Image (cartoon, rainbow, N blue to C red; front, side):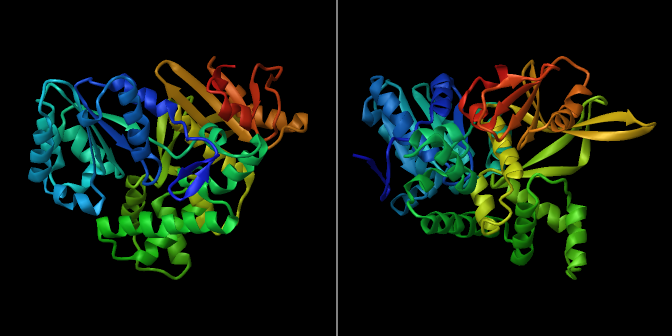
Length: 423
């Protein structure tokens, strides 16, 4: 029998081992574990039941796990920081370790003072969730003075999605490519249900939250910016270019500053991510223009009513998200070459860095002809260093190497094999 999940059905429980292991590695480290990410991406589910069940299975008694959801109406009184602090302290009655889990802590005014107080209690280990990046950047880093430990949670990766999906791997890919990886999408059976869920999520959760939190005066402009970014995912743009688009459409009362602010609000909500361009040979960042990708491809698709479903752009967005999930810092690469006595810039889709590791990645649908292979290899072969170069293709193929030593790998193998970068 399938397992019931909030009114729907999933064949298997969603596994989020990559995040569970991060929590386990940080357990009782004397820092506040801050679980961030877009709303409805599974932060609460990660902490309860996944992490909570882990604690219980390893000998922690339930009365030593203090869990409060600060978005539930019954917990409204705990939005008062003094009441929250007093309540939690009243439950700490012995010297054994207590695990405090607080959902959506940013709803509590001056929450940083409450959490800082818990840092002085030796037998308290604190875990909090938040859905706004400024909650982390402006409060945690500054106020916790280096004692806030962030764990970013993303919508389901393709591997997580496939594990929970009731169907073949190819069917899972086709579903994921269109509807993305928001966990609750797995409970929806029809296309209408899936579309309606994503649309309501976009409008009544994300945009409403951004508008209310930031006192947005021009909702029409915010919606237009979202539509433009959705239609041009992975394309180079900047606030000035967007302002010119408004002017060309006879909207002349929108300035660059307003557009910049609205884009930052979208970034702060984790709805989109900004990717800078990096001059590989010049070893410097190019400040503008940049690229923007959606945290979940299904949310992007529903925003444009499932038009413009070009697989190359969708693949690019999915690969970018996968690299973030694996913990890499990701940039778009620029390689300048001289061709026929003229300077020419070639683009490398992604440069991903992690500690001493670096990989260069190109994304394309097919390599049917030698000419296409040469075209995709060209930026990679002109980089001039020994770091690994990879071309990811749509075709479900067994990975292979070109004559020049570049790894060619199918998108499904790339996403399903955690070690695909090192094949």
